[in-house]
Image 1 (cartoon, rainbow, N blue to C red):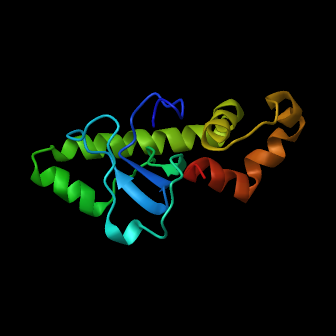
Image 2 (cartoon, one colour):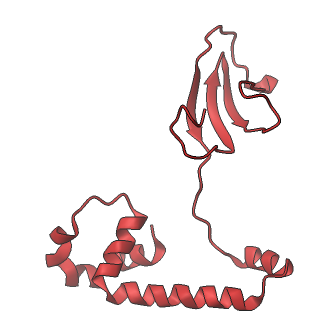
Length: 142
């Protein structure tokens, strides 16, 4: 399925419709290449249609360190200084993008599906850099 979708990786799960069944299926490396197992609750009606429709697939999502994750990692032996260094780097980056238009624009472009040429925003530079919504978008990445 990953190849037919043109993906460079094999997702861990797919939302499918197939032969009267619909739902989520997880990838099991122990199964044969063309094998699928569905739970009885996934079968909605009888069908001879052999085409599989993939509605969605699992994809990487940004993750953030929160108190719980930090406590888990710390308990597994990650030194506290690692988290402090990461925090310092993040704060420095945030301060930098709030005063540097080029960095701020780069942050917006990578965080959003943004298709506005940088040159067209140049006349609005001071307005954008002082706009609370723009500044929040830069800091939160979305």
